[in-house]
Image (cartoon, rainbow, N blue to C red):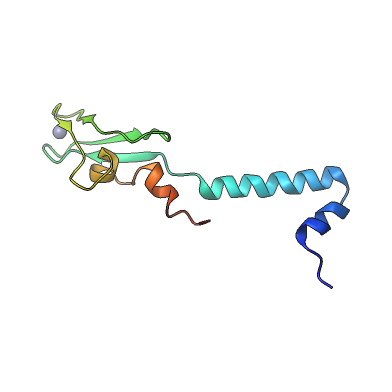
Length: 100
Ligand SMILES: [Zn+2]
């Protein structure tokens, strides 16, 4: 008879169980955490700038730090990071995370 992981955890002493569960949660969170740093390259002047993406919203507009041009997403892209950044935005990443 094979016991489930939950049964095994239930038989451990509470302190050890809490540690194991906390570790499992931590690993799971790291695994799903999106990359928030993206380098945006301006299509007009070629200037590259490291930016941190917001996790809760898509950014539609981005002002180039080099030439001041207001960048907008390309048709079909959801935000400027998907169009001009090195990393797609967090909501996009969430759909192809390693845990899904
Ligand atoms: Zn520029």
